[in-house]
Amino acid sequence: TEKLQSVFCCENQLSIFSVGVKESHQMTIFRIIAAILHLGNLQIQAERDDDACSISDEDEHLNNFCSLLGVEYSQMQHWLCHRK
Image (spheres, rainbow, N blue to C red):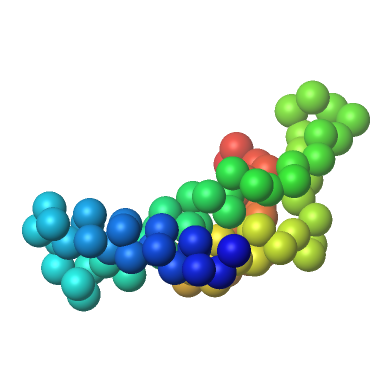
């Protein structure tokens, strides 16, 4: 529920503040953690060739990842699916 999420968020903020992380850096840390969690939820499709893969042009998690980190969607989509 929303109340539980609020409590969880406050506990995390208190924890990170207690180890000396400035408040101005906390949002950056949370943004990076959120981006990593979204990256873990990507739907990567295997192609016919075992070395090839693709990601939908409208993947919500990749969109959130890119938005959180300020990265261009098409570039990240390319680099996640190609070695070079």
